[in-house]
Length: 197
Length: 197
Image 1 (cartoon, rainbow over the protein chains, first blue to last red):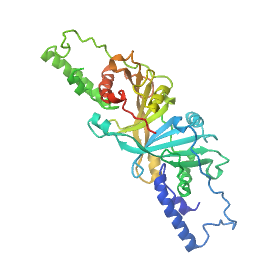
Image 2: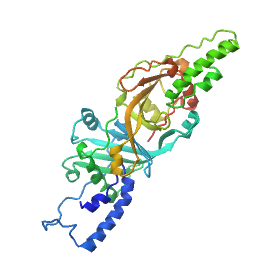
Image 3: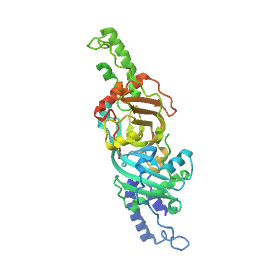
């Protein structure tokens, strides 16, 4: 991963939508740099071709994730404008509650996102505009721990699925932005969300 | 319930903190009205004393609620400044998913609230202030359906517990504000929260 890519592929936690846009710009800029500056970026100093395996992504929605236990909730302002619930399978919840790091193989974390929608019906009862609820579902994202399968991305597989219909976003440029950003939480095994009591 | 009380006891969904303050004012004003205007407010037209039983509240935190499934998430601005997760026991989740109304006896809905806290660590990665997470826990509230036990409050028992330490708020004036407000969602069996897919 070049430094240039690392800077450009920085969407932030749950910032994949923004990352998507930046991802395209990054691809373009990397191409320009490669053309203008030779191939220094794509061959390592040893002169051997870069043999780092291409990252593998989560390509199927894990069964039953909507029934998993709650890790925490989140709200993103700005372009994302989302309310989120972060759920974990039993392996994830156990590791979280025991403060166990790194997360063991089998851990799956799901981040469900909805539009951060004002609730007119609640506001009417409140008598003021202060209530926001889960609006239309925007996406669900997964982190799956499998230290062998996902060895090239810190042991984590990343997945992003639009809406709730199970359709994969199918965009490698988008999914490529996950790992460089989550790497910034290295001290927590790449997981941003903390457990909410 | 007099009209005066109904107006004064209107805290809104999860507006119990505000309701608390209003509750005290209401009690005071009702007393003043009773003294100044006679007993018209406390005896019905029939001349019989008002025999409506005093409401019964949920006085114990239901076991295992933190492991329940997610119904939805919520964000309240203003004085409440809270992020919330609404969880349901199996009876609740089944009724929600089947769209079954009224909720059957045995339904329990839990609303966990935390401060709506900016996440400095996420914002640093985003490069802008946009990320909010669950801060310190403020309270957990319950609605328990038991059409006999809680007959005087629409079949629902209401409970409010500060923090996460299991200590009851213990304040009847606060808990008295729940039912009049939830009554405004009569078409949904007094439940404000809708299921989030």
